[in-house]
Structure formats: structure tokens, C-alpha cells
Image: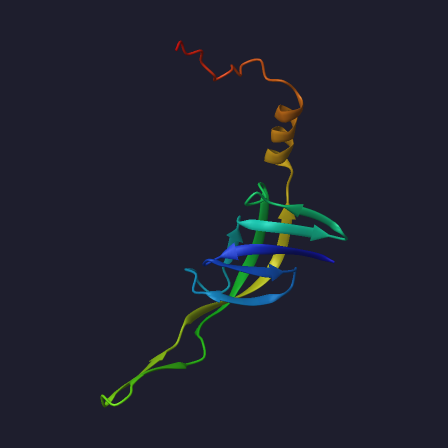
Length: 132
């Protein structure tokens, strides 16, 4: 099973192709596509890629299904013996998304691995000799 973990709005969501999720409001018009590049983890049939912190070259494409308000919550403040009571309501703005594609490329990662394997002659030691 192919799935990924993406980060948006300070939260993380586990998604797979075809799944629907509700996230905090994102700017966009219904039926438009969004791309998420903050992919933290990618799994495909037991093979995992974990980002540090993100996987470079990974993109999750989602389609906006709906812009809506979430369920109403009530926030109550109360102080005993002071005749103080305050009730306030809140409805979070949400965006409903359908994940259409999860793509992981090896563009940047492959270049980084090649540089690490071979020694780079341009790198000079940074330590300096100091007389005491």
C-alpha cells in the first residue's frame, strides 16, 4: 500500500491516493489543484523514505473539493462566587481535499548522494592554527 505523511497548517496527515482529508483553510478555488512539497514520509510496499525534515523532490497533488465551516464548539468561562459567566462559540474554516497523486522523484537526492560518496577537492579544512 502506497501512502505518505504531509505537513500543512502545523499538523501532519497520513494520506494515500484517493483519500479525502479536511485541513485548516487553504487559499484556493473549488476544483483547483494544490501541491504540497512538505512530505515527511513516503512508504510503498514496505520500502520507506524518511525526510530530514522533508523528502526533497516529493510532491503530493490534491484537488480542492469544498471550502466550509467546521462543527461549532462552545467555549465557556466561569468564575465561582463572582457572578462571571461567558459563553463564546467558534467555527473553524476548513478545506476538504482529495489526494490525486503522490510522486517521489530522485532528482536532488541522487545529486546529494553522489557528492557524499566522492571526495570534493574544493572543500578545504576550516580549522585554523592558533598560537598560544
